[in-house]
Image (tube, rainbow over all chains, first blue to last red; front, side, top):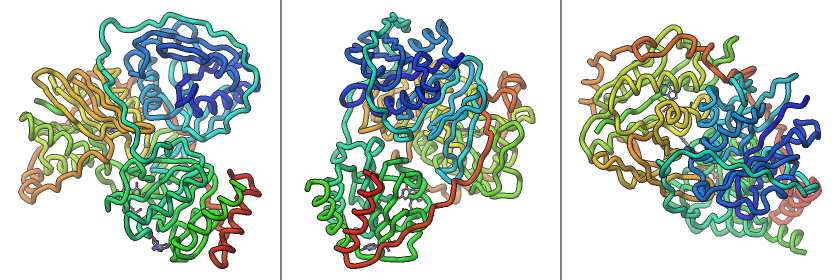
Length: 328
Length: 264
Ligand SMILES: Cc1cc2nc3c(=O)[nH]c(=O)nc-3n(C[C@H](O)[C@H](O)[C@H](O)COP(=O)(O)OP(=O)(O)OC[C@H]3O[C@@H](n4cnc5c(N)ncnc54)[C@H](O)[C@@H]3O)c2cc1C
Ligand SMILES: Nc1ncnc2c1ncn2[C@@H]1O[C@H](COP(=O)(O)O)[C@@H](O)[C@H]1O
């Protein structure tokens, strides 16, 4: 019998998050297309539309737990609800998108089962009956394949953008509603406010395209050419630490060991030398384009396409060409 | 006020690091070891809380005897006490077994108001210890903290800003609590010469697993739920295709390739 896989649903800007849909698609593949082995589990204040959306991405059944106290994620309440449900239903595997909250939930939930989570996996595959997760160590300088020997459910968090978003199909599943078991009283952690990143309304971690600038931009105003190219591609703006430290752009844009680890479909680095700490955050992008006036810049060692030249000439030419092609 | 900071010794590069038959990272003896680059940020955070509220900062690591060195660095920065958790039976612990050791050490050091750790260690990048500590100690955890807005040990309250996907979240929790910090939080101070000299003369007490109330089966390889099957350099880059010409020619070619390969 196929092992039962749960995918914990997270909400995005509209409906179930893209990362959750990617994981549902992957879970369906891991179950050999037997969607009855894949269950979407959702906690929230309300669960309107959730069952259909999860089913369309590959879940054969959906369980929802709704309560006003589950409106925003807090570890105490989510761990309580999910661990009680898992205690009853005994899933074999639990997959969670490796967002900040998702990684926190994965580690806390796995610990509550007496085991541990394999975090931030970029690949999942069976070795017989054992699910293995592939993940980066040493900031991407090593790749580890990890087995989860935890008692009970094996928890893995999965890095967003690791798997394709499945084509929507199916649906028409009605959710089983379960009353969540929650701790008494107020949560020990109270969420007061969320402030979206200034400028970067597009999340680096969710973006298909990232255009990043480094010290080669010369000054803060140089980001104009980066922004223009990002805009035409519908992408997000990234940066090296050097320019964040210089105050040309805010920290949330930083890519690298001490910034964000990203895996877009396309990463365009302009005026970035390619220091090991920067590479740690972007080397696993599907396609990397580098523009640098120094032909020996280390960024070319990880790039798929390289252009030696002045970014202030190349970037506008790229913007113009992409605009022509994409907007006809 | 009492703050505990957990610091970790890591190999400077992954070159000498291998995986044991039990699936745990082994740094060998040859390579260079240093304080995890995130730890000075955790220490600085704890020291700033002490600067405001008074009290003490305790640095603790679980590791080999040579890790005494990183505890001395913490003392040199301004930590008041330091302890090493070391036991033959605890060698080769994964992050979840390590969390048991650290939870035991926290209990042994008594009434604390806050525990500060890094968001993730530089070697295993496992994002595990903070949330696992919260479960073991049954206290709230605030992860990815880039600012402590309010810290009030009298009234047992803390308010922080978390750096999460898409923005910042302001959250409040009761103390004691665990926070995991990101490097954006504060610039770490440099230890003073005086601090370094004093720290070099300090004795660092060693706690065994019995001292912290743990058992051999629950730590070390036998108590480790995660096991690495392999640990290799990522596949080499496929080779970079250089595109040449005038800016317009280059743009034409590159955009053509990207559209042809359906990268977008
Ligand atoms: C502990 C630690 C953590 C770190 N974490 C990070 C991190 O998370 N992210 C990160 O990015 N860095 C990080 N760094 C810093 C990193 O080591 C580099 O210093 C930084 O990435 C360099 O940024 P840069 O490439 O923009 O600048 P430089 O290295 O100065 O490179 C600028 C490049 O621009 C090119 N250039 C100049 N003018 C032009 C032009 N007109 N057209 C085209 N090309 C041009 C130059 O040839 C050069 O290659 C970290 C460092 C340490 C020690
Ligand atoms: N052996 C250890 N001793 C003390 N602290 C540790 C140890 N391992 C991890 N930590 C702490 O936990 C943080 C996160 O590590 P990890 O969850 O393993 O990525 C580190 O930044 C340290 O603060």
